[in-house]
Length: 202
Image (tube, rainbow, N blue to C red; front, side, top):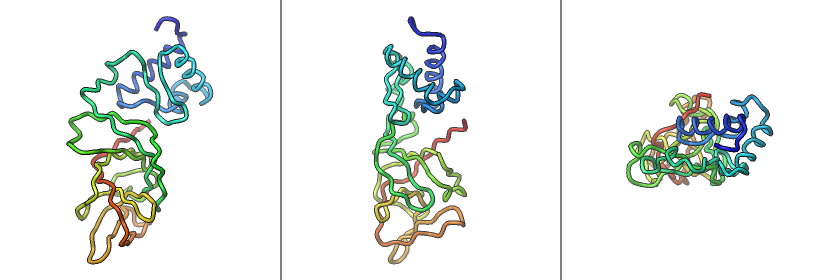
């Protein structure tokens, strides 16, 4: 870390500690809160570290900071990287652009074979199932589901997270919050089944 100021070393150590704890990098806002500076102040520190080729980051994307020259941080042999694709509505269906927000490193022991993606939850319609606004859901990509599964479904070009039930001639997508009525549809596409979720308490 030669050539770094004391403050830059502090920023770098925070990023490393965060990655070791959560297996993905902090947001610029989280860096700002840790340093007790403005978002612009944190942005300036990150730009300085990038200029010194200590980190690589895309500050237009969330959680897109990578520490350079420290392979032990990532241990890719023990983790599988899956894409974070925007947000999923856990309230009224909200169109989710499949813009990649970044990647999530998941321990191999948590996953089986198959394709996976992660989506960020918005809203409170699944709160009674313990799924809250801001959670990151890890989803196994599949196009079928059993009754009672929590699924990511595409309905009328909107992506939503609900509990799946197949009825006689329609599908019911049920919220886990009595404030939200079920969605009944004959035109639904299952994108995947919820495997587990990640929550940040900071």
